[in-house]
Image 1 (cartoon, rainbow, N blue to C red):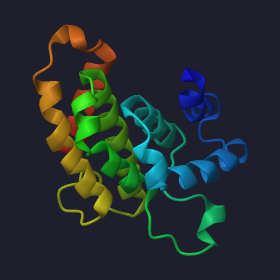
Image 2: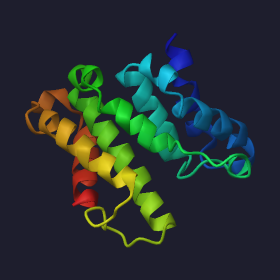
Image 3: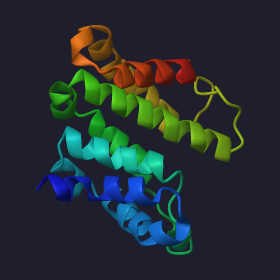
Amino acid sequence: DVYKRQILRRAALWSGANATVMQPFLVGADAIFTNRDFLAKCQAPDLTNFLAFMEKTRFIAPPDCCAAEEQKNDDSLVTLGHRFMNHDIVDACTPAQASRILSSFTAVVSKRNKHRGEEFGSFEISTSQDNWVLWELFDLLGGLLLTSRAEELSPRDISSALGAYAKAS
C-alpha cells in the first residue's frame, strides 16, 4: 500500500523533469489532482507525495496535451491546496509534513509566478488563486511549525520551512 501512495513521487525522483518520460505521468496526475472525490479519500501523506511530484517535475501548468482539449476550469495545484486546507488534513498533519507542504507549495507557486512573468517575491501583490491558497496554507500550518519542538523536525525540515517562509515573505 505504501508503494501505491508513492508511485508518482518515485517516478518524479527517478525521472524529474524529463518531458518524454514524464508525459504520461503528468497527464494522469493532472486528472487525479483535479478529481475532488479522489482527493477526498487521500490522507496527508498521500497529498504531500502528490505535491512533491508537482515540485520535482516542475508541474506548473496542465500538460501540453491537455491544453488543446477542452478548456479546464480546475487548477490541479489549487484543488490540491484546497484539500490541504480541510480540517481533517490540518489536524492530522505532523510538523514535518507541514514543513514539506509549505516548502513544496511555495516552490511550485514561485515557479508559476515566474512562468507568468510576475516578479520574484510578488506573492503578496499577486491576484492569482494559487497565491491566495499559499497564504491560507501558511496561516493554517504555520502555527504547527512555530509551536513544534526541535526533535519533531529534522534539520532538512527546518531548513525547508525557513526557505519557504523566506521565499514567500
